[in-house]
Structure formats: C-alpha cells, structure tokens
Image 1 (cartoon, helix red, strand yellow):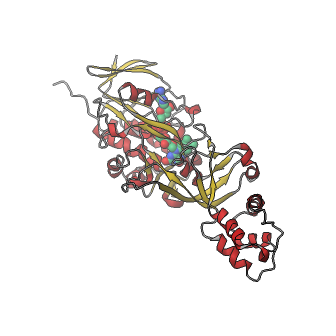
Image 2 (cartoon, helix red, strand yellow):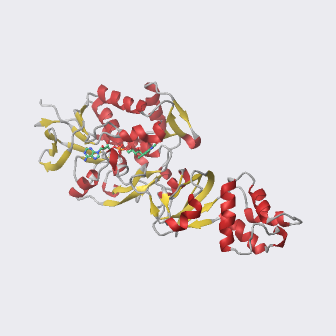
Image 3 (tube, helix red, strand yellow):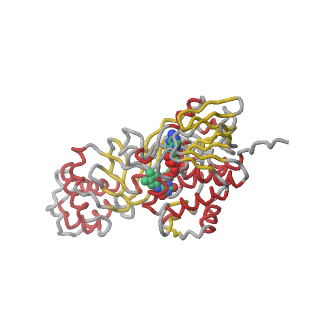
Length: 423
Ligand SMILES: Cc1cc2nc3c(=O)[nH]c(=O)nc-3n(C[C@H](O)[C@H](O)[C@H](O)COP(=O)(O)OP(=O)(O)OC[C@H]3O[C@@H](n4cnc5c(N)ncnc54)[C@H](O)[C@@H]3O)c2cc1C
C-alpha cells in the first residue's frame, strides 16, 4: 500500500495547479486522472489559445447560491499573481477585449507550465488511471485505483464539471460529495448556446453565421456578491450574438445562458446604440420613401442587411399594415413605433440549450455552504477538499473559470498539511 500526504483526483487546471503548489511546499503528492490525454480542457480552451485569466476578477463575475464564498480565495490569489507566474515561464500573452488574457501561441504553453511546476514539486502523476472507490479510514482515505490502493490523510477532489463528456468529464466528484453527506446544488449546462423550437426558428435559421453586437438580458435567480435581492433582477450583457441553424450563440448568449431559467424569455436589443422607434418617426416626417428604404436607412450599418430584411418580413406577419413597399409617410405612428420597439426589445423563449456536449462549464455543484472558504476543506469530513469547477462557483465567460481553478487550488494547497515526521 502506497502512502501520500495528499491524493488529488483530477489532473485538470485546478488539480495540476494545486499539486504543484503543495509539492513545492514539501508535501508528498499523488495526482490521478483517468483521461488518456493530460488537461484536454485547457488545450481546447479559448479557441486553442486559453483565456487563462482576466485582468479584473471580482466576486461579481461569479454565480453561486452562496455568492460571497469565492471572495477569500480570489483575494488570496489575484490575476496579477498568475500573470507573474506565466511571465516567469516566458509565456507570451496578449489582452483581448474586456480584460481577457490569452496565450499568443497555444494553450499547451499553460499545460507545460503546470507540468513544470509539478516537476519542481516532485509530484507523482498516474495517468491514465481510474479511481473506482473512495473510503474513509481511521487515518484518512483509502482510494482504489487501477494501480492499486493508496492511502492518504487528505483527499482533494478536482474532477471538474460535466461539460464535454467525450474528453473525460464525469460526475465522480459529485458522487463522492454525496457519499460524504454533502449537498450538491442542481447541476446544468452553462456558457452554452440556446436552442429554439425548429418550426419557429425556420425564418432565422437561414441567417446562421451572422454576428452582431447586442444588449441581452433575462431575469436571474442568482444574487450577486454585491447585495441583497429585492424582487426579480435582470442579468444583462453587451456582447456579440451569433445566429446558428438551431438557435443563438456567441458571447452574449453564452453569458446569458448561465442565468437563463427554463421556460423564461430572454430579451435582445439588436441596436443598443439606436432608439429605432424614434429614428423611424423622425424619418417619416416629410419622407416619400418606402418603408423598406426607411428601415434600412434607420438601421444604417448597425445590423447586417440580411437580418434587417428578415426582420421586416417577420414584422409584417405580426403587423399586417407594415408592408415593406408602403410609403412610410402613410403608415401609422403606432405601427412604426411597434416595429422599432420589436428590434430594440426582441422577446423570445428558448426551448432549451445545446447541453453538456457544447457547454463550456457546469453551473451548480458541491454546495459551498458546507466548505471552508479559506481552504476549500469540507466542514463535514476533515481532510476532504473540493476545488475548481466541481464546486458551486461558476464564472462568466472571459477567463474567470480558469481564475477560479487557480485561486481555489491555491487556497487549498496552502492549507494542506504535511504528515508529521517520525521523531
Ligand atoms: C470548450 C471549452 C473552452 C473553455 N475555454 C475557457 C477559457 O478560455 N477560459 C476559462 O476561464 N475557462 C474556459 N473553459 C472552462 C474551463 O476549462 C474549466 O472551468 C476548467 O478547466 C475547470 O478546471 P477543473 O480543474 O476544475 O476541471 P477540469 O479542467 O475539467 O479537470 C478535471 C479533470 O478531472 C478528470 N476526471 C474527471 N472524472 C474523473 C474520475 N472519475 N477519475 C479521475 N479523473 C477524473 C478529468 O479527466 C479532468 O482531467 C472552457 C471550457 C470548455 C469546455
């Protein structure tokens, strides 16, 4: 039987980072992962360039039933600290919009950095190696693996969420949490494209590939770390939207999907900088032009022409007096206002999401009210820790999920205890 100071299950972002730091603190660390390839989620992240953190990370960038939980770990490990590590490893990076930091070359730079940090810490890694069962013993935990049973006084679950099962995601972390009497907040795909009823989506499906900046909102069930909740609150983002064959995607929709509650509408403003009703009313004065011309002039370059045309065709179905060939001066104010308003406040009810196969993360997870916010240790079972995405802390799109992996891993690694040396 092999003994370690700590066994970490899951060699993804959080597990590898925790292993390196704990190893460099002098602990005897074993990290185990069942996937044939190391840290595939890091590899495919950020379009292959890994959006590894964000310049500005605050608790308000995370969703959780317990919004203040992440505060301590985030304060203990800042983006600047991670950037310093990336710089120390000579990794070239750049900033994209809204503080998002990406590798210049490829995500593998971050994986190699984590491997080196583990090597410096003398970490033992078993991979691929499945973990089939975990038991509590008088001295800690017994862990059954493909390479035999290991014993450790401390166990860190870093098994991530359920997104992209084909590269190794499992529910093992949630099962272990339940086995040790922990509550798991209901899980669901987040940062995920939204889908619509196929028949209702037909007119829009032909626009697949069109992208534009929009303001998007929906009612959220989450409280932010900021304050108390008074009635329903709206989550809002201004980002790019992308039409797809089955629905909507792009950063705007991924962000709002984390808040979207099944059966509820989302609202999209296709021209956040333009009050279209006002534009149409102004254009009507003394104009001899047709509605279609006035409409495209009111929109200017704000909306791609194909979307503008489809919009008018669809509006005609709801507002029969609005024929594109009608002279705009002859149209009723209320119809023109309704047309403008429809594009400034497009209400639509998604039928679902593209699911875990296309999601970037899992919302929900191990309930943080039963974990220490200082160390990520279970408040129910001494020596048991949960870090990274497996816990109920879900970041916005933009490098926040990796930052949570680093920050929670650091908080845990600094709290892990070395076995007492025999005197
Ligand atoms: C396509 C995509 C792009 C993304 N891009 C970004 C981005 O650019 N920026 C960002 O911040 N976030 C991004 N994310 C999210 C980010 O990848 C995750 O939030 C992050 O990897 C979570 O880290 P983790 O260590 O908790 O889990 P993971 O990195 O998922 O690691 C979990 C590990 O546990 C292993 N495991 C699971 N079950 C078992 C088991 N039973 N036994 C042994 N091992 C097991 C898995 O094989 C895996 O290696 C992206 C996600 C996806 C899917």
